[in-house]
Amino acid sequence: MHDIKLIRDNPALFDAGLQKRGLAPLSAQILDLDQRRRAAQTGFQEGQARRNEASKQIGMVKKQGGDADALMAEVAALKDKLAEFEAADKALGEELEAILMGIPNLPADDVPPGEDESGNVELRKVGTPPVLDFTPLEHDALGEKLGLMDFAAAARISGSRFVVLKGALARLERALGAFMLDLQTGQHGYTEVNPPVLVRDTALLGTGQLPKFEEDLFKTETGHYLIPTAEVPLTNLVNGELLDEAVLPLRFTALTPCFRSEAGSAGKDTRGMIRQHQFPKVELVSIVHPDKSDEEHLRMTNCAEDVLKKLGLAYRVIVLCTGDMGFGARKTYDIEVWLPGQNTYREISSCSNTGDFQARRMNARFRPKEEKATRFLHTLNGSGLAVGRTLIAVMENYQQADGSIVVPEMLRPYMGGLERITANG
RNA sequence: GGAUGGGUGGCCGAGUGGUUUAAGGCAGCGGUCUUGAAAACCGCCGUGGGUGCAAGCUCACCGUGAGUUCGAAUCUCACCCCAUCCGCCA
Image 1: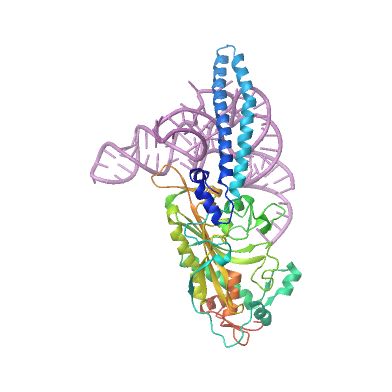
Image 2: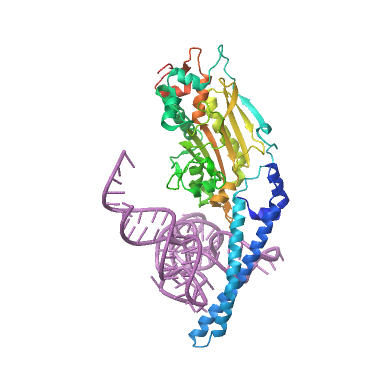
């Protein structure tokens, strides 16, 4: 949500930000609404002031047994006018709020301009893709050949975009989740959280998935939504709070299943485990002082990268251009892992700084030391990492000519010492 | 699913129609005292909007929304949320 004061003070800057996002200017419409609403509000408040004053006098006159008819008539006459102002104030206020809630965050100054993903900029490549002396398979072919990945059974049970993992592959996924959590909590200072995966609409409004992207979500008959990412419950841990500055920064991590309807992505990644309705993910969320969010953004990205380094997977880091960023982000780094089977880099993490955008929507503030006014917090979120896609990456990068998969060093303690996954293992 | 009790500032909590300008306490901030600290004492201290260079002035906010009334934290209705008990259940 945007600060109406900033739009008032600098409408041109606001529109320029929208333009970077490929959106038409809105400041004129917003400021017109804002001005009309404030006029209604002022009229309403002036009327109330007079009414309260008269009411006070009526009370005093009556107490002394006098005649308050003239005053009561004045208040009665004021009433219609008051109701009109109030209705206008409310209607205009709601209209304004609806518009503001639907506008995405503005890009940070240093975000490269661009219309779509072709405008993204690669920052660095890390690690070396494995040199294989055979034609590598994609993860789904590998998994089915091993007899440990069953898309047909998943389809019978749940339909398309689901998978059943078995045996060593099921365990490998569990191992990856545990390894990532241990790393983020043990070495990077994140606090492990086990949050609800069913949430209210207010939580999704706070992080920005609602009201615009309801079609991407699964909704229950009770009115709850399944979380599309643990960013939602983790960030909302501070909704409505007024924190002491001394508790900052807060760093949370959680391993949860994530649920996405994938509406609008028909025909995209239909095969394999790349794009599922349900997938596990380790999420990182930081709640920080506004002066520290840029620094925290780099730190968080490093925390995500560290998982890939420790697993010996090659990857690259890109910064998303203005046209490719998500709704709530002011700047986003994507991490893409090398997949030999697909012979390309694929997204495995996305780390965003939302500035105070979500904090405003959630009303999450802190009290700065020795300052009277409260301020909105800054929130950041990133995957550390998407566990399902990491499983794919491990399979494709550690595959052998015979179709077996070598278990990366770091994961062996989580696999009971297993060094290699073989057929039906 | 059934029953009951609740929702007041950062936190606790008083307040059943009109000097409420939401008491009091805790926490916090400033000060006195002290070698220093603690204690004690004194003072300040909710959020948001409008207006104004500012000081200030003013309005709203007691879960949300409607209503009654000249006047609502207080009375009425609906809804939301929380808690406890019973039932069912992992």
